[in-house]
Image 1 (cartoon, rainbow, N blue to C red):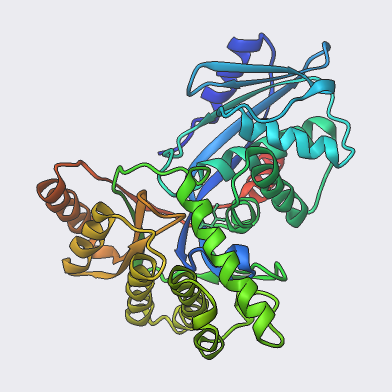
Image 2: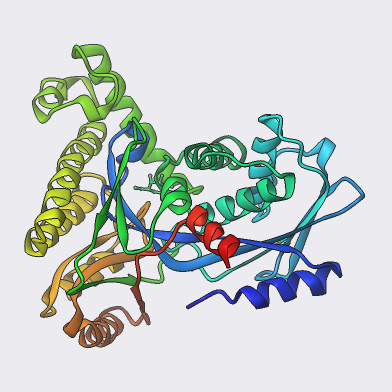
Length: 390
Ligand code: GAF
């Protein structure tokens, strides 16, 4: 499951005939708090031990050359005349370059190799992993240090304004700032966060339904439009509401007739989900995994029924998981419409859980699920500090 640093450095050397400097960024799994980030709500993700390595070296011709060792493809631009997104993988690193240039950071010519093992379209934020790894490498190359919050917001901007996906801040923030053995409770309005310990007797298991989904694809944008429309009604009709996060279910009920049934249901998901994240924090601090798991199951039902962002295969994975002994909770994770479930399972039942889920999912759907037992991992800044200290 590890990305081999030596392999990434070698791939860069072979491609560009030069040694490079290595940076990397993890992927993430969200334990609870889905689609709450872009309305200033709460999320509870952790970084996981899938990573993207970015190896960078200078070049003298003023060009930006991105090489994907995974796709064995290269994208090359004149930095001074960097154009708009082209609908390709290279939009993600190019978007980061675009944002750095907009910030006035002098990024001289470079070659950058990306090599990662984050499953694509699985809801584990391969995009944020690529963006943040690229930002770390280009900042290192330019000799500029930025605070964690700035790196995360800059990478989000790359995704929103350059790639054109309407995503929130959760992924870039946790991928940049996570700390090993901890989950991160993030307030997406203030960007204040709290690192929370995870119990040692349980494991976080990710099960990939193998139904692919891309945040840049239509459904994510449709949902965020529906949410935005509902939020605009609440803002207009009720005093003191700036973001959905300020609204109660009573506020929403009072505005029911003024919004579409879709917007009503999406907003109800977000209001109840914010409350679940706060309750999940309490459960974690109390070490009450029964309660934590129950909240996960409720969160899944809300994503499925109110947010209409699950799919038959993922629902099946959750149902199978919840039938297994030792499983406290299971839910869809990430943007939705496919991708992975996140499961909390007692250590001694983990192996049995993985076997049963794979077997029963294959029997029900004919699809081979991939399951990973994950470690809460370091974010890009902590990883860079460790490389620096080595
Ligand atoms: C995707 C987005 F990128 C995040 O910002 C978040 O909205 C998530 O979907 C849903 O919680 O990962």
